[in-house]
Length: 275
Image (cartoon, rainbow, N blue to C red):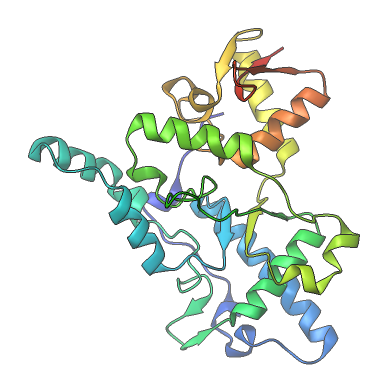
């Protein structure tokens, strides 16, 4: 199955409720608030699926994305190369990334936006219902960007992309995603970033396994990066899959007895053999 990206030519079709001003204000009545949560959950999943957004972060704004782009953009050593690179990446870079001040949470036509606390409550609801998972975001060290950050990935050189991908894959952790932990509102104040499960890790695992079967690569060792970012994956739905979700999918394949993790000399996961 190949993936055809409609977002390259069409904008997301927002539902009618998106034009309803009270939709952007947390309702006091519990039944109304629950209905509001259900609708926001559905909207976020549909929006992220449409634009293939894998994470949402309360700290991600248009300004932070631009800053990440400026910091990681390579110098223009060739006008021709720079032009072709910009042309090839323009569509993906201009697509929405789920910014908190972007169209998903801010309807400029009716001048209504969600408060940060309300967005966090919606994230919490999504986690509780298995449609998202809190993602640990460790602070950057040695004046470097956090290894968990994926916001500037498209601007990195190939070697940097490979390193960043493996770092995220090996270092990611899910925070307090059990129902008992999620009921602790104090802990929730420190959680800002979620993995969005517009497709469940089990579904991604099955897609990867089926692709390996169909292409006769059973038993072959694939590096993590080439599996979802390389030419071998072609236009498969899992091409460009966030490394944290890939990690969850591969863990599922291992549990099913369908994959074996391959580790390097440093003990870090370097590749996978799908059986």
